[in-house]
Structure formats: C-alpha cells, structure tokens
Amino acid sequence: MRTVHVHITEDIPRLAQMLLDNLQLDPAFKNTGIASNGKELLEQMAGIPHLPDVVMMDIQMPEMDGIEATLQLKTRHPQVKVIIATVFDDEENIFNAILAGADGYLLKDDPPEALHRAIKEVMEGGAPMSPAIARKALNLLRRSPQAPRAPASHDLSDREVQILEQLSKGLRYRQVGENLHISTGTVRKHIENIYRKLQVHNKTAAVVEARKKGVI
Image (tube, rainbow, N blue to C red; front, side):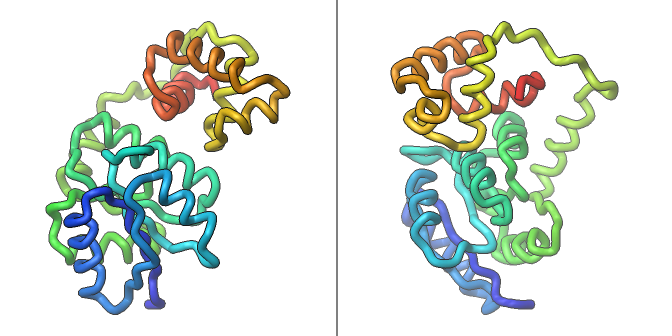
C-alpha cells in the first residue's frame, strides 16, 4: 500500500497528539499537519502544495465545527476523504455528518488498529464506522420512510433558495453577495429569514435542512 497522507483536525492538544501517536504506529501513514478547528483546516488546505488523502475530523471545535468544515472541505475538495473521529455518538451528529459528506465515523476511544483499518478501508472506497455508530446509522435508515416523499413546503423565496445554494458551496457572505449582486447586509437579512423559516440556528443546519426538504 502506498503512503497515505493524513491531516488531523482536533482542538484539544492531548487528543491531537493521541491521534498522531496512533497514526505513527503504522509506517504506511504520514501526517501532513494538525489544525485546531475547521476554519484553520480550510486555511491550511489552501496553503499546502499537496492535499492530504484523508482528514481526521473532530466535531465540536471553536471557530468552525467539524460538520460545517466537512461540508466546506468536501465542496471544495471532494477527492479528500473525511473520517469523523469524535466522542459524540448521538444520531443527530451521525446524520448531519453523513449529509455533510463524511466518508467514515469513528469514536475516539476505538483502538489504534481500528483507526488504521478505517483509513485503509476509506482509501479503498469503503465507509468505515465504529460498530456502535453503524448500529445507530442502521436505526436511522430503518426509521426512514420507504417511499419517496414530496418536498415539504418551506415558504422560501427564490432569492433565499439562491442564497442557500451559494452557502452549500461553502462561500462566505461577502462572496454570496458578490455573486448575486447584493450587499452583505442584504445577504445577512435573507439568512435570518432562512433560519426562521427552516427553524435552524446556523448555516450548516440550514443547508442540511434544505437538502432534506429537497429545496437545493
């Protein structure tokens, strides 16, 4: 197996070092850097000459959490694999991580061998998950309706849908405004309306909810 380049995104230094130590147990893996939050990760991705093959992604981080970072990273660089490595095993985080584009989902207390297998599996096109996560993911699927549903009513204006489409690409408010020829203040006002109509509280949740409803 060729060398796999792995980037770590973790805000707690002790846990970042633990992941790094686990990676270094297998000579097939090479660390390309450590980011302390999603925003820093995206900045690092824009500044390094060669993108990593895999990003190990925490969920709860300051500045930008792992769900939004995954969404933005996969929008910009879909070839980069993302494996969530977190302590959160609740269904909401699992669901949101999958919708954001995560390729795998591990728990931080999994042994190093599980991490090594997961990286190799994701590089072969698999979708590795800790057993506990896989069970919950199956439960989510079992509770999903078998027949396709018509898109739910959302009461969003055409402009609000356009803004959601822009946000789903990971663009900042200023970039959205420039693309749609409106001010940043107008973008923010539309986003406030979007949050109210979709009953969400952040950009990532808005994009996830819009996709669930078939809006974008």
